[in-house]
Image 1 (cartoon, helix red, strand yellow):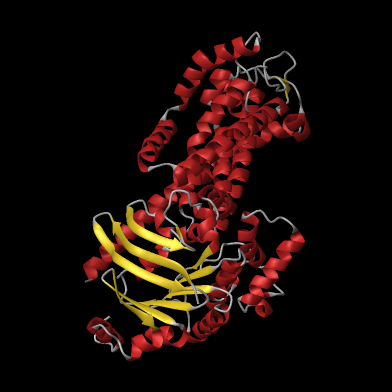
Image 2: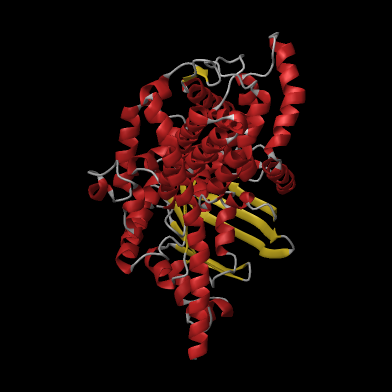
Length: 251
Length: 287
């Protein structure tokens, strides 16, 4: 498996507060990488540096490199919109647009210039199938997406992200607002999707990391404490702090 | 305990009376307008009144057709909307989404100030600056015209359009915009394809509010429109529904005065219609 993303000595500040300290990590392609750690200690912040969503916060300052396919994504020559097309994102709270299911999925392809109805129909169906929600919604594609259940909305958001054919899917605690049944469907979906996509998932749920991820990174106070194969990290942690966290001594 | 309850009740009662005072005023005005507006209409005939093309209230054989006023008010409002809405809308998008905080604070202050300027001042500046300019530029005998009135109205409705649209645009959840940006859309694409559609009821309400402002304005348009009861054309002097009432009331009597009340009634019905539309959009925005 080759590496698709690499962070080198990545530091990030919100104003004066340092939120990430010298993070170094390599993410292998077509696998699931989980970021775990207590809330508010940098995992989501780090995830958002991978598709430059932190650019939207004016007080953020970043030092270091994030390389995607060997190219530093913070280089001035990089087209941010093109980058975000290739590195998609699913958010903590399901956030479908207030439009029809069809228009939600077609939004991305339309943005990138696809106008043909036939082509759009094809992409919409394929994306919904890939997100395992086609059978539930195929008869109500013209209905408003806000009328769906939370779990369906989140799978719709995954379908919407897939519709622009990304290489990587970043998921920021995608199941934290969902019930257990919806959660397990998203987890199954993630495992299915890693055949074709690289997935990076932030989770506050350690069992979830164990169930679905290949590699796990443990973040604490903005530092990457330990990173390795999930099975190994949970059975034989090297760092004392990792051990304390996974055995439930804090967090 | 008991004393507290008494005081509570008393305060409740006072507030209720104050609230009813407002309702009472509206009711009183409505009843008064209907009662005093009907006689002239019955005497002149509804059709002749609404669709008569000549208004000659002081002639030996007076004629009371208010079609010129209705058309002037409709054209004037439509013109103000055609000019004012695009400017106000794009300003609102700019201020709520694109402008940095310093520019935004400065321009919002300017917009609030624009809203606070009395309409007689708009009229005065229009009369002294706009009307002569229109006369020069378009080479017409008199610059006081429908065109000048439209320009003044367009400026006067800007604050309501900008502020109400901004409120709607700023209420769009950031999650929608994040989702769009994360799909690779540019910020401007995001604002126009996600934020604006999500705020469309609020923006529609802003437009309707602007219509209400424009149709109800009297002082400023009286000063720049020439106040002649012509069937309206862009560069001719015209008279609006509002100014028709205002300009003759002081010396009117008999049927003429009753006809002025009827004009006020017609204007009132227009405003009611606009308010109903506004409530419709505001309700939709809430859902």
